Amino acid sequence: MNHLPLIIKREYLTKVRNKSFIVMTILSPIIMIALIAVVGYLSQLNNNKTRTISVLDESELVTDIFQNTEHTKYNLLNNVSLDDAKTIVEEAETYGLLYIPKQDSIDALVKHIKFYSKETPSLSVISSLESKLENRLRDVKLQQQGIDLEKLTASRTKVNIAQESFIGEKTSKIDSYFKLGFGLAAGYLLFMFIIIYGNMIMRSIIEEKTSRIIEVIISSVKPIQLMLGKIIGTSLAGITQFVIWIIIGSILMTVVSAFLGIDLMQQTPQNEMMQKAMENPEVAMEMQNLVAAFYNLPIANLIIAFILFFIGGYLLYSSLYAAIGAAVDNETDTQQFMLPIIMPLVLAVYIGIFTVIEDPHGTVSTIFSFIPFTSPVVMLMRIPFGVPIWQQVLSFLLLVGTFMLTVWFAAKIYRVGILMYGKKPSYKELIKWIKY
Image (tube, rainbow, N blue to C red):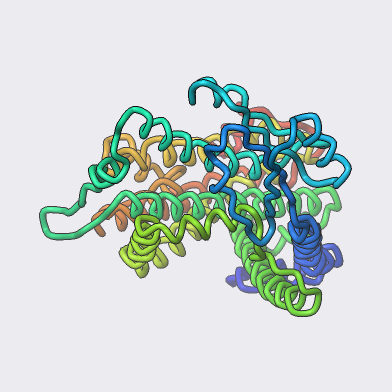
């Protein structure tokens, strides 16, 4: 009789009814949203504060570039010495004093500009001031050299090479960033899912071994059915937990924004600079290219491939975790077997980052997208760049075939290992178990 559905049901219900599982399923999104809310609240307190910066411009070259914003006010000081300006700023308890001395040349001037403050100033504030001064002093220097700024501005040319395939498909550099971003997100999600729930499968097997429950179960169930039941049941429990996290997190985020008045998109000095950048026609055009790049992605292909390779990759590595759990008696002994499992995943991520983005159809990228232990990550990174369907199908079939072969090997280890106690096996002994 096929007991697999019963084992899956038992494993799933055992996991979701576990008190620690229930507590962490509810508590994890609450803790995460609470941390986000605290950071948002503290940032809001910090950014609601208006910074008043006093400016002493003895050079009289940059006075008119300082315009007040929502969070930054400029107080121009005239006809006062530097010492008097420092005293005025300290008594008024303003944010700081920007001092631009008078020098014989622009090159000498830039070396003597200073910002005085009681405490270390914000990096965004200093960067904003530096940007303003650099732009103005560059223009002043060009004018002193007799260069017409209007002609210089009109002569500037930006080259943006249009990319198009021989069959007429248009792409851009931004498309590549979007494609790489999808691949990295998919690889990271798969990596975390394998680590979290693969370890859960391994611990579950170790617990049943140490409690000797496994001796009763194995008398009526085939080892391979028991192992597959644990893998599938734990996977379903993990998916359930993820869905609950998303639902609770979305609800809590809405509640926090509505009732606590915390706006994570509030005005900050960084947002002010971003808004000013958006007023630039070139930046606005780049944002339009970003939207176009998103719609250029093969969304349907990505979704289907993500589901198939995610499931295949997780099942492949889960069977290895199950074999490790069967081979040892406690979690301490698992460390010697973990490196061979983690290394292919780490290698896949590095291959994706350093080769796929540079040459998605190169030899290295193509080969590793067919190797089952790296294909779930590398192939997902390659697909946005346009991978033939036959390559995707072949890679997935190799992944499924390797999973079945791995399950067969893992079941061999599982069959012997689940009844072994008090001994830490070596790699040589594991090979003997496979031959039984």
